[in-house]
Image (cartoon, rainbow, N blue to C red; front, side):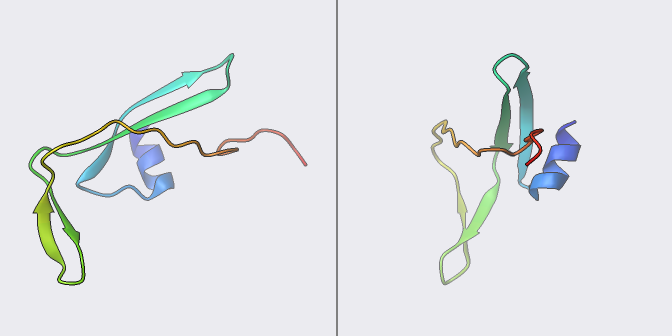
Length: 71
């Protein structure tokens, strides 16, 4: 299932889906995204590579990602 969502969402290494939870009654899909330990990230105008030294869990809400309602 993780590979399916990685492909659908365009998630590429060093990022990966760490887990997926679906609450049927609440109709809530939680996708947990993580990165490989020791990974470097290219950023800035100089395209320098940086390592992550600290992380914080964050949540984003994307409405109607898997909406089953017909218009």
